[in-house]
Amino acid sequence: MNHPLLYSFRRCPYAIRARLALRVSDISVVLREVVLADKPEELQLLSAKATVPVLVVNQTEVIDESLDIMLWALKQSDPHAWLLSDAGSITECERLILENDNDFKSFLDRYKYADRFPDHPPEFYRAQAERFLLVLEARLGTSPYLLADRPTLADMAIFPFIRQFSNVDKVWFEQSPYPHLRAWLERLLVLPLFTGVMGKYIKWQRNDPVVIF
Image 1 (cartoon, rainbow, N blue to C red):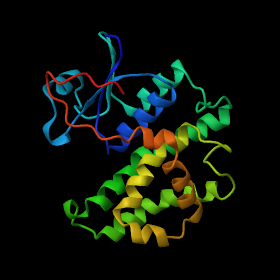
Image 2: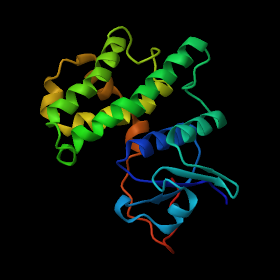
Image 3: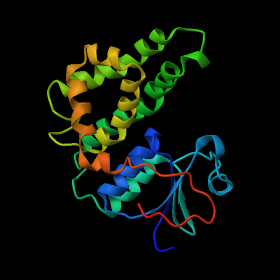
Image 4: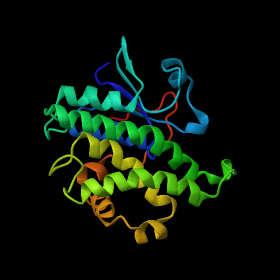
């Protein structure tokens, strides 16, 4: 393999953050765009969880967790110092990402797909998710980014999920009591790095031409 192989899905926040790290690290990959409702057999054979992103580094190394893909890429090259060196900041970075990936993501899914979770109305799930927004708003009230005066791993791992949250009810989000969070999200959404990883690709099928991302 001349390049690692990435199975991805354009709108998936996990796949977005993996692509962000690969792009910022200047690592080219062969891209295979997946339709989650019709996953290719190749993906299912590579990973027991059979969902994106999955990075095939070589014939012996497969990474199927988005955060692990980010860390792998940044360890190859970290030109904007997304990885922090201060022990306290590293701990806080890990804590924020863990909260995002667990409690917040769980309530985000229920808020976005509330019809699948009829025990409560969407507003209930949104209120539960807002507990994490309050944490982020407090941090962003004293700094333009979560852990520094520049984006770091915490920002780039979390913001695709806040983007997804904001899109569930855009009118509510624009009027919500989180001005610092909204400003942070807007700064990240217009980064050429982000817009550059959001190109549209057709569903990959066997015998398609190779797409280099």
